[in-house]
Amino acid sequence: MVPIAEYIDGWIAIRPHLPEAILQMPLLLRLLCYFLIADFWHYWIHRLMHQKHVWRIHKWHHSPTHMYWLAGFRATIPQDVIVNLPYLFAWSFLGLSPWWMGLAIGTFNALQNDWMHVNVTWRSNWLEWFVVTPRYHHIHHSDKPQHYMANLAALFTVWDRLFGTYVNPDDVKEPLSFGIGEEVPAVRLALGV
Ligand SMILES: [Zn+2]
Ligand SMILES: [Zn+2]
Image (cartoon, rainbow, N blue to C red; front, side, top):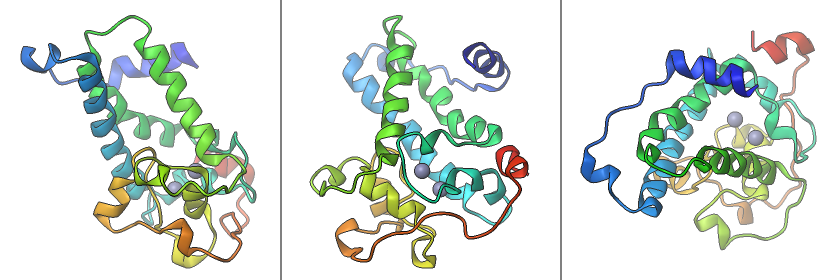
């Protein structure tokens, strides 16, 4: 997958040239900028995928009827491509960073993806002030109509609070059920068509 991803990256990545003053900022600050910008756009791209005409490329992600740690990797190729665009864009902030930074961020994002889908529902409300937790993201996978546009954030929960898609997990008392509520042939689901 990595060589294929690098090849596609060479074709589609847009990386703005940042002023020297930004590139000279401490690495921690640049990392924060990287995650804030990438995650902000990830939120809006995710929201876009929940609109009628784009939903088909995201359906596969919502098709599991139970949550488990690998559920998050169910993503069609078009979904993977557009979701990763902001991360390519924001990479400019990390242009001058150690060689292992790409590996570290890739690993972090994969683990975050595993973590938010993991099949646990422990109370984690203090963490949810900042980041997405399993029970927070499970609401996003709920098949109840009132949860269709809930908790779209991928990393920072602030976007849901700011843009009106926040559902507090403490307010959801009934057990959740998951899935898309329709039968779609597996091949169509996986291709996103
Ligand atoms: Zn979704
Ligand atoms: Zn998910």
